[in-house]
Every structure is written in C-alpha cells, then in structure tokens.
Image (cartoon, rainbow, N blue to C red; front, top):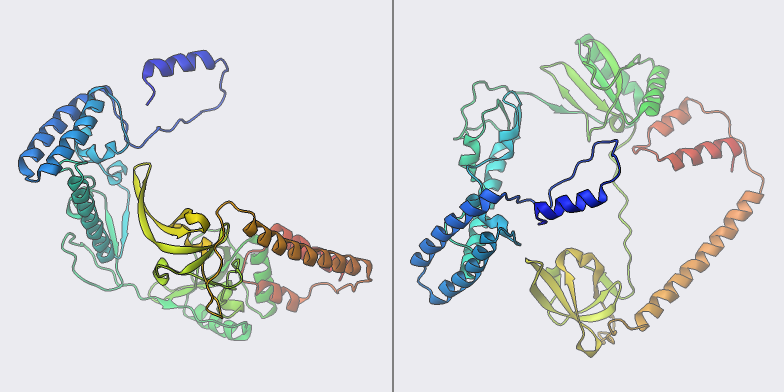
Length: 443
C-alpha cells in the first residue's frame, strides 16, 4: 500500500492535465485499513493470540503461532498490510455489515427456493470452519475468528420486505409469511409451425379474455412474426418492451425466455418464437481439438497413476498423480506429468481440457516427448500444413463459384418469411449481410 505522503507527491508531480470527465479509482485491495484501525487490530490480535496459546496444548502449533502470527502482528504495528490480512476482518472493523445493509429500506428482496439457499449457506459455514481448523493447525490464525456471517445472523439483518418463492408450500423456521399466494403456471405447448392450431388457441384465449404476448428476439423478427400471424388471420400489434399486457388482445414485443407459459388465474399467456415455429432445438456438439490416439477426459478421476497422456502444447507424457502447490498464498491442485528426462509439468485441475488420455490399439508404450523440444512442434506444424492445403482447395472452389453464373431468386413470400422466422437464434451482422447478398446476387 502506498503511503499517503508518497501518493500525494506522485500525483503532484504528474497531474498537470486538467481532467474534464469524472474518473473512478477503485481500491487496491478488498481490505482497506486506516491508521486508527491498525492500532485497534494490534490490541485485539495480541489478546486473541494470548488466549489461543493458553488453549492450545500442541507445542509445535504453539511455536508456529508465536512465529507466524507474531510476524503479522509486527507488520500491523508498522501499519503495513499483508497477504491474507482479510482473515482478521472481525478484528479490523467494528460491527458486522453485509450487502443487505446497503439496500434502501423499501427495497424488495426476493429469495428463490429458500430451503436450497439455507442448505448452501450452512454448507459454506462448514467449509469455512474446516478452513479455519486447517489454518490453526499450521499456526496461521488464532481461534474464534469469524470470517463471514452465518445464516441465522444474516437473516436477522434483513429489514426490507421479503418475497419467498418456493415450488412447494412448506414452513421455514426463520420466516413467518404474512400472506401466502399460490400461483398456477403451465408450460406452453409447442405448435411445431402449425399456425392453424395456434390460431385456434388464440381464438380460445381471446374468448376467455386472456392477454396474449408473443416474444421476438429483436425488432426485425417481431415484424416478421406479425407478418406471418397476419397471413393466418391472427391480428396482433407490436408494443414496447415492458408494456403492461391488455386482456382480450394479442401483443408482439421484444424479449427472450427459455420457454413460454400460461397463468390461468391471471389470464396471461406468453409464447416464444421457438414454440410457434420449431421443435426444441438441440445444440450442435462443440467441436474440440482431437489429437490422434487420444481420448478426451471429463474428470481427472478418469486417470490412473502411470497412464500416458497427451498435452495439447507439450505432447505425450506420463501422469504421476495430483499434487497440491501453494502459489501466491493460494493452495491449488495440479496434475503432475513427467516428460523425457524426468522433466515435470504441472497442469491446473481447471485446465484438464488441455490434457487427453493416450490410447494405443496395440497396447505399446509410447515415446515420451521432451519439454520445450521441437519434435511435438514438428507434428503440429505438419497438421497445420495439411489444414493449409485444405484451405487452398476451398479458396479455389469459391473462386470457381464466383466466376460461374448464378440464379436470381424471386422476392420473399410468406413461406420464406415463415422459414426465416423459424430460425431459433439471433443472426449476426455478417450472417444478415450474407443472406441479403445471396438474395440479391444469387448463387
């Protein structure tokens, strides 16, 4: 942390320009300490350390505490922050404050599936307790040092009106609802492009005084949808997003949902483009780089010590297990891979997509590559060369197509508009341009 006097001198020396716009400078770290906070933190930590040393029986842990926490005390006395100072957050600040305390009193807080929220909060409390025990055993923290707020205490901080949403009506010990409202909701059926069937449903909804809202992805698609509906005698009007739906009317507006729904009690129907035109789409499988004689891994649990693996950047090596390393004060798990000459490569668990399991039909042991060597680079260069040859062939093919005489299509009719509206995704600018050029110049 830069002392105030030095920061002032730097700004005075360099800030010669007048800034016409507002500039926001964020904090350098999450835990901000002022001069008076250092003093009170030292006193509290000294008392907490003395109390912890009285409780601990293990002499080794006592020595570690005296050395490591003692060193952190000296840093606080010199008004210096350090890596991991946030673990003493309960000593640094007066009182307990959470984000809810910054919300205005009239703000509405919505808790969706309160039981799951409570279960997750209790799980995080247990993980925090285990983390503190681990730090204490290494002499890196004192006892009774809460880092976060537990669930019951967090609930006590809520002063704003609450809306609890739950699939099942059940009692929640921390809350006493004043009103209980049951909402009946039905998923919207899929019309599979059968607009006549949709028209029959729209007529039924109008007779029952429903408000019907069609959702389109953008302004252009909303116009297309209006056009298609009109061709089948379904009269609807475009309204601004956020407009309150009117009963006994059909609206088209811009919006996106995973699926439509019907609220019978509220007499509201919402239909997405997907339900109007298409069946449920399944995304094409993601294309990953597949290496020869390699099998993609979903989890490191699929590997056994001694298995041969292929790293996308370093080639074939031998997996020897998981090792936990400390980097910048953070403990992380790494895959340990041995290469030629016993060179070691540590791959973070979250980067397992870069590693594939080596598979050999003959069961022969493969040759290990050397880290930093050129052999694996030559293999990849050869593959790139093959790709370049394919690209050259494609360029030649496209050139021949460009030189050939094309066919000019007729103007868009209702069927074409319906077909385009059935596309379930938002076109990019380049896609729209390509479509327009094909219609104008032909193929």
